[in-house]
Image (cartoon, rainbow, N blue to C red; front, side):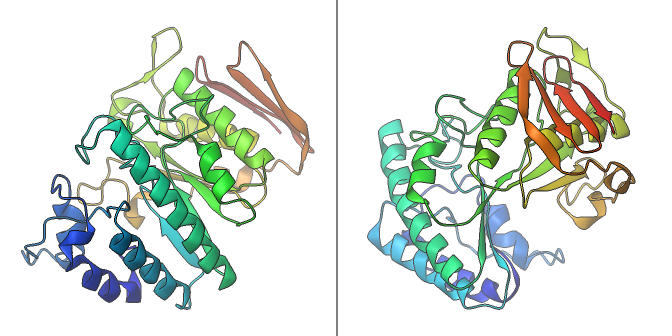
Length: 313
């Protein structure tokens, strides 16, 4: 939420360091970078920035911050790394036990239900970015995947509140990782939840960070267009109304590391691949590894086991 006119309010909240987890690891970039974007060398002296939702004072301050955002003339609010702390079983973001992370997550879910409702009541749209998935599907990426409560608990709390789910690491790798993302996203869109996906491309690694591995453990190397189309095929099979796809080069800009505008090119496939409306339900085959969807203009399929795809349009 380091954005626009909300910066001053967030900066004010940060001054009360008691509202945040007392763990300074991986915090300095989030605190100091927005004030040092011109590389002035400015340092804030603040240590903590991850909200401790177990505290009443924190929940109240956070709710007021989102209420201020709801009064802004914006389209909505993007909640980044929304459940990273409670799902962090590697203790990189906190030293909380699993029991403590569960209490944290329960309190956080209650706050999300409250502030999402506030946004919607002000004609704004919440977007939740998380690594969480349904309990019977499991973690969607190889980190922050030990969530004490599955996505179904969150959806129950948000019942009747429109929002979109952001998947920041779309098709992070092949095999079970890709298949779980497909199954999870299909279940979300079947429930009417739009998905917004960001597919990160690592050209120096052949597509996936440190290499794409098939279900059989074989390395698969992609050129950019092939990797883009593989991700687009997966998205087209899983998407629902209101869903969006994004693709960025994570290695072409040392400072932005894939997140700045320079890394998000507009590709001709975005105009060339035209499906028409979907026809029928997604078909799953090949022991849960291949996902196929019929459209008015043809057939799209993706095989998560070996990383192949088809766009017969």
